[in-house]
Length: 362
Image: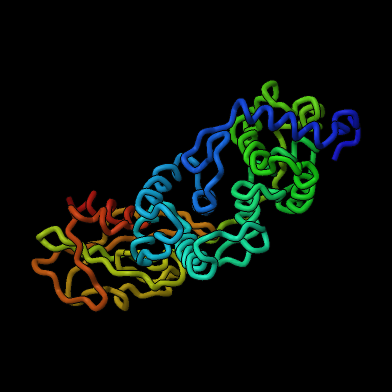
């Protein structure tokens, strides 16, 4: 932190919190999961939204959240749903382990806690799939516990307010400590949402609107002229890449061969176009002939590849296709009419593969 401008950081934490809450009362974002002023937050809606929002934008989450609460209005309703129904409703949100953990958590709340979420961070952390961030967010927003909620927006605000020049991720612990030092006893749930709103709408990654910020006068980064450069980030390591082959099998009646992926692992429990394992890009270790879902056919190698980015690696799939007169029996296979493919709720990667194939096959 820069010690050249001590006067800008001597503002009392309580005063900073008061300024931010006054700003929030005027500028809070309206969201389908957020309680209106004077309303009591619903822990189920808070928890559901926080799980959905991990690694996903607010704009993307909105329609999914509405569909979930219309279909499963309470945590008991969600707990009673079949796993494949939950996975299908989640399709397109990505990071599918979240959906499996979501369902497991709902079952635990319904079965072990009488349908009521624990109201402390420790109690929430004991639930399946609930990490430190989600526990703090639910404790603060749903139960008004003094918990410090730190997401990417909050890290950016703290890095600028205190002029923290140590790069991320090494500075994460310090940024959380600084955020905790400002978290008030009064209205901690509103305060948590206020900091996130400030980062999302004012203290933005590019061209922050410092003149509109309630903390502008206390911001070390602004005074030093380095706000937009913070938080600094360590150079990213090269992302590994993998390759594979996808097999698109169609019938003349416009039916597509799908199967379910194993319950655990990447895209677990989701429908997929049959494919080889995804191997290192440096070599094709998986022989497509060993993994083709049907034998004795002439595969058409389609031009181009399908590319998709996962959290830890990039994937390239070549696509082999065939159109058959009849549909053969395929162990574990399911034949889906193309006009009902939306019901299969394909994950984004597999939807790309199907679009790629149909674009070339017509």
